[in-house]
Figure 1 (tube, protein in one colour):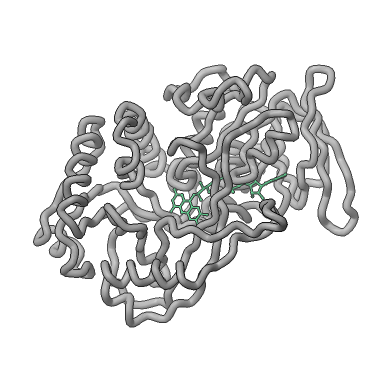
Figure 2: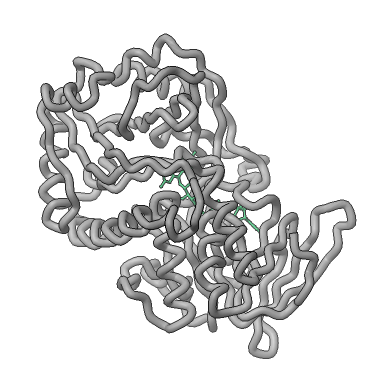
Length: 398
Ligand SMILES: Cc1cc2nc3c(=O)[nH]c(=O)nc-3n(C[C@H](O)[C@H](O)[C@H](O)COP(=O)(O)OP(=O)(O)OC[C@H]3O[C@@H](n4cnc5c(N)ncnc54)[C@H](O)[C@@H]3O)c2cc1C
């Protein structure tokens, strides 16, 4: 950790998750950058997620948002950019992050789910995303691990997964190589404007409880599920809500699942990772820890055993051989959701040089969010239009 070497920077990034560290990597080639993290790098959602690279539109987005077709088309265009970044990532970063892009299947068990996949496929293809609707025989031939219950699947050849415990530290290390300072165990407690600069108060949580103030021209709030809490320090109201999710991992086994498997009507994501373990998730919620009705933002969400059982039962329905495996571990993480299903990316309100990058499927899209935000901050515009994701879409209070 840097020890408050300088206290004046061009850009201060609050949050040492994937978005914050990747943005630091891109920004630090042209600016002096500080990343401020209240705990350890990657301790938030970026280190706790499923690592799925899901480029197909998630079924819940299409199911509940028939009126959002235009917005979803725009999002699929962003997906194309994300795919290109992921394809070049290991080369660009010169690292091995256990990236696999062997394809993903979104499976359907009912006629209604097949209809949804057909609709989804039409929309995705219209924006150039490579997807193919497979019938039952084609699906089971491609993925023999799947249950006979599966009637069809939408195959996207670019989908896959990456190890979330590796990626963010790589970005952090590369950002440091480029000169960024990374302050860990440094909780931001206040962010205010003073004489044309941002003054950011930090509380060091290691032993000394030392207090420090950094000064920056620009703030990038990349605090994930805590972005709303951080925004209020500057009197900004960001409608981003913390959501707890669970993940499960089984013991290792010989290769069984060769794709990212998702479901068109049930909450499921399942994949076999590099070491042979099977990761099972898919958006099952975990209650946030609360005291007197208020979110305890320092605590992990709680594990509800019924939810774990329901998640595992769904996995066994779709990949029956999972039944023979022991569950090794269940954990929870907290992610950020906006009132609509999209990320929040851009300059906040009329506030001078205060930017936000949070929400959305931030593992799949985190690197692309970070790159586009760095373009926006450094040049005033980005190579992909971000207006649709502006914090200001929620109204003038932001
Ligand atoms: C269980 C789970 C599974 C998921 N699965 C997937 C998936 O498979 N694919 C996918 O695309 N997405 C997935 N997501 C979503 C994805 O993980 C997040 O969208 C993404 O990691 C967000 O990255 P981030 O950098 O914005 O936030 P985070 O990684 O949460 O980073 C924010 C950081 O800010 C720090 N911070 C907060 N407050 C302060 C403060 N006051 N001062 C200093 N630092 C502060 C936090 O400690 C944290 O480290 C999943 C999320 C969860 C929880």
